[in-house]
Image (cartoon, rainbow, N blue to C red; front, top):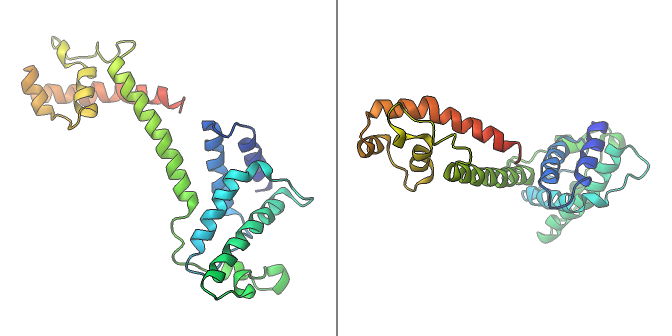
Length: 226
């Protein structure tokens, strides 16, 4: 874990804050944080809010992290907890139930009982980590989706246009992709078949056996850039 954390932090800080690669590397770092032992926890019902705010803070301030003589992993946990424990404290202060023993449980080394591991929060199901990963993936998918849509409409190298059933050039893959994927609402295969005067099964088979694999191939090529 020590080397993983070191490499993950370096991979995030090595890119500009607006770069897509930094977002991808940050995604991996957030996954590692969720696996780190020693991160403060609390049974307070709003603990997920404190944890989420902490992950936002880490995401924005990771470039400021500096190991303090310990192992990088221990130093990183200490750095995260330094912010998280105050966010947990805020929760208890806000409902007038602040108790340091509950907010900041001792570790196993200090008490012999691993209270951090034994405190469970049944509401802690969707963390910011999950949300941020979803947002990153959604942004990536949106950009990829737009790139695929542009490719379909432009068909730069005519891959889609020239792929059609024998003697039915109007039923090419570009035409079908626009009508079935981009048009809103999308047309049905049966409607297209009647309009283009082609057998329904022939058109369906062409779409499934030729067009879809071709679109998947194009998608894979474009994915390398997203």
